[in-house]
Image (tube, rainbow, N blue to C red):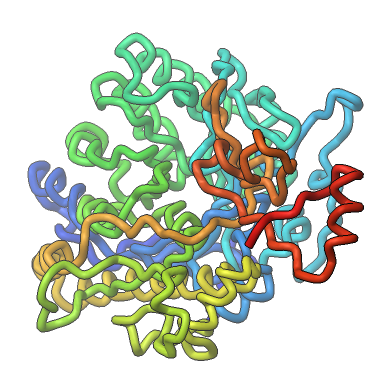
Length: 505
């Protein structure tokens, strides 16, 4: 991993647009069109590796990339930064409601300079973006209030007040902090017009409190949330950002909650927001590279991609590249390879069959048959190797995007984007392998009747009892083993005690 550490004396983040679709001094119409166009940039932090944009962030769970230890991040990954959520670290158990979360008392050192780095062990060269909630967020049965949002901790749903969140950012000192946004977390589909208006009003009030407070440290950049509602409903909030906080250099960027289509409206009515870096907080695990390319074409600079963790858990090795191979193969190619399939039991090919020049550690050191064996045996190393490979594929994917933009500009990018759409399937394969066992904080809160996430390891014997796992997850449990011949005495004894029964072979 090549690291270009910036000047540690630099006080705050800097963003530079290296190549845009329009030059300074363009007409308003040209500026509006350029707002929805791909661009090259560079994001620099004090004491961190810079981020060349467009790029992506690793989405963490409990402060770490799932299945990947911090030393693996240093040695085998080259991610632009990581996204962390405050609800991963705080909880108030009923037995001790005044207990202070350990992360707030974590000692620091020159190598791990803030509590976030010290507590999680994340390499200090990797920038950290902190928000209140995970991506995707666990739906909450509680609603937000005028002064708080509902979060999901490892001791259940709780409230996080605006004051507590500001104090947490001041203590933890992330490189980028995303202020609270009043999002709908317990409903599916778009909010009603009345609810959307309340979302805009509350978020506007919270952003005023955020900037009027001296709590956020000067080394933390603020990316203001842009809500997933139409522009006319939140125009007053966005106008406040442009008029009050951009001229004073308090606002460092924008965090789009899955609605980058607002950029043309922002360019027309709030042009001072255009030079700021744009982060897309994609909440869906079903997002695909095709949708990422569309958002790059709209002018998004940074992405959170929860689907990387999801496909790794499913046993899928990503299998695509940008630009797409030339000449294009016949028929649509899969976006990933399901290594849990029996056909890979003896395969000595790399993890991704069409990326034979993949230079990630997993592909250079192992082959598909080995990862297939690990997945079948449910060894954690299998998912670790998949995470290394899949993050490396996304790193190469964004490097290809930047190369195309640098050499051919927006015109060549659109040509290659269309060729990518015509080369690869629109969705990832489902993945037939068994996922890792889920922990409590990974459970989704969707109400009663939700099936169990994990299949029981064993079940109760009996003529009227289904095998372990049957009727709970839709999968049959393991067959009852046949008792070896010559041990009938032992079988009879066990049957009398109710521990077992003989099954005919």
